[in-house]
Image 1 (cartoon, one colour):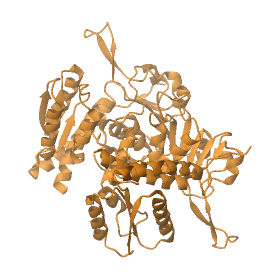
Image 2: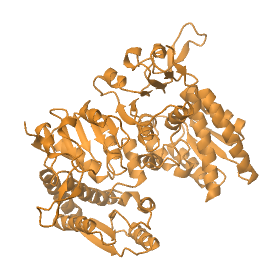
Image 3: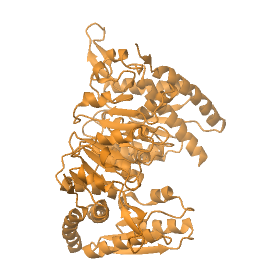
Image 4: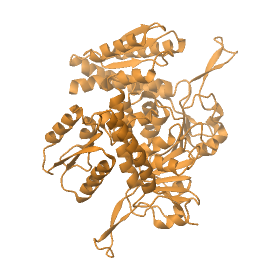
Length: 292
Length: 292
């Protein structure tokens, strides 16, 4: 058996087609959706991510502003930028690319972004809405991308056992909340570094979401035959056979494709969905301003 | 085997003893912790709860203000009261007793309370902090009372399987987040009305938290021998043998005491802890004002 491909790229393309129409509708009302992206420092991977977001904006007719600050920038300057963007009526979304330099307090920076412009969905007020089961606001992009992809593939979640491996504030925990929410209705288990018998816990899953950041961690023996496996990991691993010296690996061993019924590839799975959901949040933020 | 009693009353007494000292310390700095409680309508059980909270305030030297509005009150009047209390510098905690009359939007009311005065811990910003693993703010009272009681009894959570039955925004979901957070480190499953094979899921639990509101639902056969069982349910059931015609029943069948290693009684378990955590939030809110 070979798992069907949970094709994030194809799903993201459909999301984008829908967004193109919504952007046009906004522009017909003289609203131009506008995303501001701030990046601090020179991390090459972060710049790749930011450029990819900005290119997607361009493709969808979303205006973008790119603010690049040096790694030595004072935290107070970053905060002032955020305040200015919070106050700018023509800016609908604000994203501060992670990671920030060590001298900055990432949590405090997130707290500062106006919740209605928090297109990453990381502000505590937006995360708290997930606890309340209010899933109509700014949803964290990676978890909501996972859910969207599962729905797109017509995967039944109701009453099924879902296991999320990883308890991060930006992926694992919110993914668990979304899977357990009314309308998704999975029975959700959150596993993590302190979990005992992790392999056995994973094997309970009808839907397994791996979000730990350890290359190829989830082995075929960990997966119940026929399970749906979503690989959130994007890890760079050394690979001398590649010209650039590395390749991307997920958290899931590729051999899992022989056991699972569905498997999301890396790259081409959750990654494109994360960006698509960022774009959707930006458009929604612009629509909500219009509705006010 | 008979389960040990997870004695919320005894644990709450210890919490209160600690709070008495903290209240004295605040008063020595001319800060009088002050809780405002608003109740709308005539629901007898709600009035019992409110009176119990106000009595506990009195016992601890916490000032309380009791605002009682008629069931027909306009929502805008309730909102104005909240705004006034948000702005009142001498008020540290605001609690709006649930349930509200049908013509009021409970979620919108919760959103209106200043997060730093939200001693119920129901504001999305406070719930979102749990998703982030920030457990030093206003914690929802019942879930944090459950955790405190487990710690008080020296029950080891790390790596253990915890199952929370119920996914409400005020108990089930936040309890799951607290159990999974760093420092607690349980492997947590959230089960609910759509869960398939609920009995089997419950039986996986080393720690089982029942928070559904169905009297005696969790049967002895659902419980792994030696498990710790926390009963959050407070249900009124008809009982002709009682003079008042009813008695309180938990969500857990009393026969579970023959299987579990620990069991929290109803009443006298989670109930007293909920009030103790409300008092702790109020004192903490006053301390935080002082620290600012």
